[in-house]
Length: 65
Image (cartoon, rainbow, N blue to C red; front, top):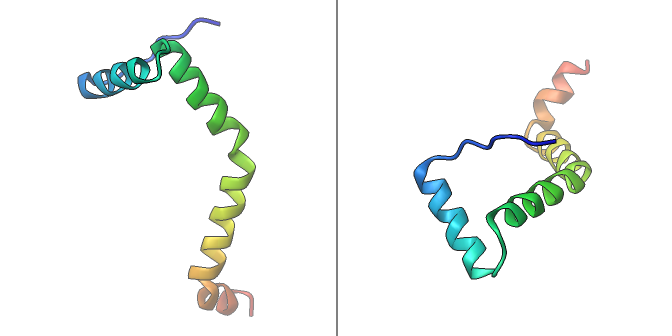
């Protein structure tokens, strides 16, 4: 499926520089970033839940009563 990705000029420049540094196309860099984001979702979700449980422990305790 084709899709258009709209980036700011600074985002485009940063992507172009990263792709050049890694000797890859901008397309390959974006695909890798998306793959990493999607494969890491469960870990990020668990981290977010843990963080909220820790930071808001007192509030969650009061709400559970």
